[in-house]
Length: 331
Length: 269
Image (cartoon, rainbow over all chains, first blue to last red; front, side, top):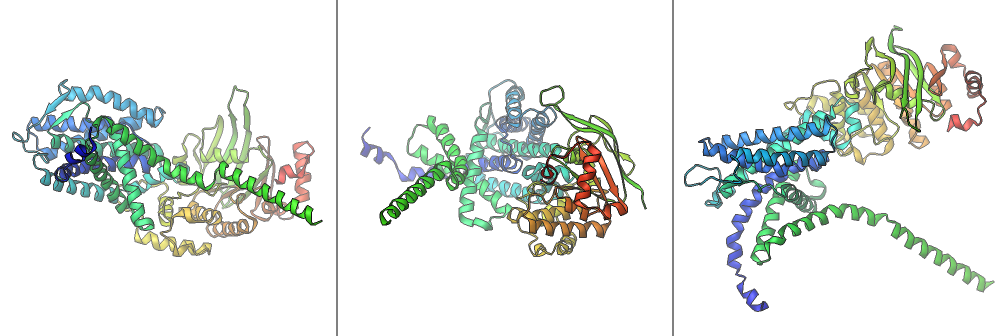
């Protein structure tokens, strides 16, 4: 393809037009990121069940709305379903001793069947905004952004309040130092289950919002939710830490985690605008997540590595040799 | 006064049974501790000192025997359910506190030991903050002005002192100190020991303290026990304990264990 023809085909106006949609999408993924943050950062579990619960939330919400339920009630019921699914992962992990990552995969796998059953064994169920009242819809993007932003702020406020309570503190202690938590009378298994339930509840809620926004629930809508959620968490934290450094408090951190979702989706919009093949989007996301996850490790290694120690030792030996030979000359 | 606070009857524990790594760590331990006793525990490496404390704390279930605290059999309870009766300070300064949480948050976690933690009450109340400040002043480390500092920023000695305070915020029925000064430099270790003496005597806490330092074992507490091969081989208290010297101890060890101590280092290390 001719490069000038390609550049000519990129209209800045197209990008501007696509941005609001990207932001709306991003806000919903910001909700997912808040859920993922609870497990990934606070109790140190990469929970793969969210891939399933995101779809569960969407499926439950759509089916309920189709049956005449108020969309907000539908989303709250979706949240409850997410809580249950997260509890299952937690029980698999704590009571049955299955490694957390496998417990998540098992729940996610089982949810595929359950999600299909919820949608009457159809892989895709539509809910039209012209027939039903929906909380959000891509037909009304700016309104959807407003609703999404309010929902995000409510979730942030609730999470901030919760993790400041006795129980929230106990969950944080469990993630930080399980030995200390136990010695102080905290049942760490219960705390892990609560964290997993809460995380999946929020993700299912986000799934409910997404299904309304795009106008349908799809059996594959949750695929890769954990990766996008992680990407949002990491991007948000990096930006937040860079801007606020030590002044980053918990509320601000949650805000940036949610913002990470928006930034991730703006990047997606730009990638689409550049007419890059969207098939490579998942590859790109995986690369970004891998890169950002590796950064803290590599930084630590740079400070104290065998390579560095070896170089230093060689240099030192060379200087000793040089000293010896110069002393030899003098005498 | 001299009421039984902890009773251990014929407790056995074998790790990795039936494998090449089989190790009998506790081989029929009997011990009765009265309320207000401050007992120092000594013994060589692998004698079963830490295992005994872990058995009391419920880190894993014992194989047989009885452990009861203040008349209640606790052998069937996991760590977190025994925690209301037990205060613990560990050898590793990292173990006793949550590094990413604030000093006051750590203390609040300890203050709620044994209580149900609801999602409807704030983690640290204003009243508690005042109490924590007061308690931190006892340590004399300047921590009372740094309530919201992350514990990860503190030195090992500060963290041990804080853990000690946390372990005693809710007066425990028994305080377990597992070589809590071993990882510190001598000067800091001395400070933490002084703080320990202060805290223990102030609340008249029933205490079990493992130490590698025979002088410390003699200088502190009203009773001394020595362990060897998973058993208690010496139990000295009262006047006899007061007049004890390191030399006496070594001699007593040789008699009690029926073996010559190859090197004092094994006991002192």
